Image (cartoon, rainbow, N blue to C red):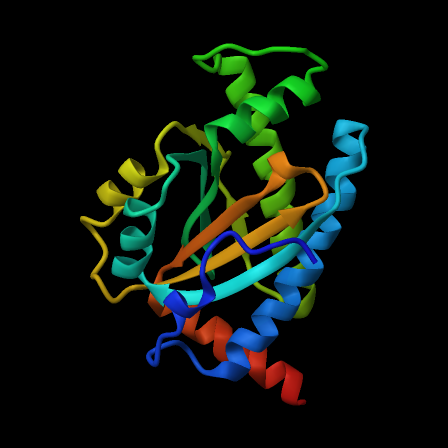
Length: 212
């Protein structure tokens, strides 16, 4: 297993959703992220293994705190999920890793900043493959109506989340998934901030299906 990028004890929160919910979601995330690696390998024409190396539920305020005190500025891609389940999705990575992915994916030796709109679309397609694969795995487990907005490049994830925080209460739950890889540039984090009144029924139905 690839190493974790954050300290797990920071996320031990007594107000997390029940363990049964998180255990099942973690299982589905593991399947989805591993399958996404296989699809990325085909897209990039290069072996790309991905796996879940950390999975946490934490308040939105704690998420911001962690990002604010991180040693490296994160860039990434944003998408919105709508339908029976709604919320915000952020795929985060360092600018250095983003540039490396662009160089290797476009078969170039060196890329200089800033990132062009074409290169942004390339990163957005990486996120599109990963996020769509993950949600397709969830869809197989429980039938839900959902659709994703086209992923959009975000130069500064923390700034974007601070703006989003204006509409979220500090105790709004977020799911934080760490993604490990055999390729160091594919060390990423996937953040999901659900709309609670749509998320809670989804969790309850998910557990009920697995009981039957």
